[in-house]
Amino acid sequence: HATHQIEIGPYRVKNTDGDWRWLETSFLNKLNDTAINGIVASSRDVTTQIHDQQKLEASITRYKNIINVTSDIIYEFHLETQEMKFASNRSDALFDYQNNQILKRADWELLLHPDDKENVISYMNKILNHNEIKQGVIEYRLRRKNGKYAHFQDRFFVLNKNDGHGQIQGALQDISLRKTHESIQEFENNMLTLYAKDNNEIKVVLEKALQAIETLIDG
Image 1 (spheres, rainbow, N blue to C red):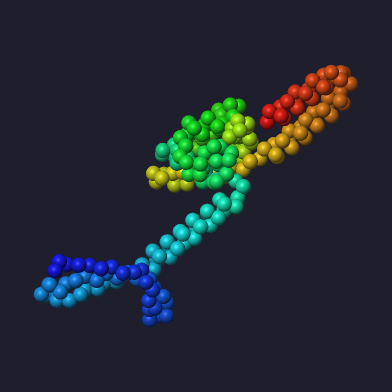
Image 2: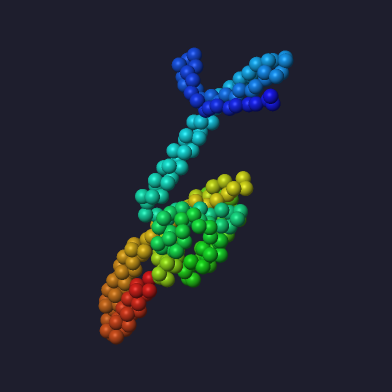
């Protein structure tokens, strides 16, 4: 018969110190080899690999659990391919992109508010061209599925930039409500300032108020 090899494992055995170790064993049929005439067994200790795999699986599970419960939208942007994907079920509801759907950088840039685009793209290029940026926070507006814009805070980390597998991992938090409150507070302060000036007619105050209200409505 032809030489036949069987592998079993991984399985656990207890060593002389009372510790459990993971092993893999292979059995090689050498019955037709006159010099051996038997079954050759060899085992190797794979405890470290098993533990590393268990840690990785636990990390992946925690990562998935965080994604499922957080209100943030998790994303990954791969520096070499200039592609990104959302790793959040909320991405479909907000941006009409499925979880894990691949987006080209140009697709993502189309979501940016025109008034924010230049600043955000400039910041992105700075990340790509300078190694000193390892993490950061930036705020900008993105167009939602319904065509309206929402304010987001983007908290990100730059990982493995120099090993050929660089990526940005980030979380988008919708801060539209906070921005609305800030705009209302600014509006109130401006109105108080206008009222405090004796030379401002009521018509001027009302015109400023209407302009501010329209800005709030447009987001």
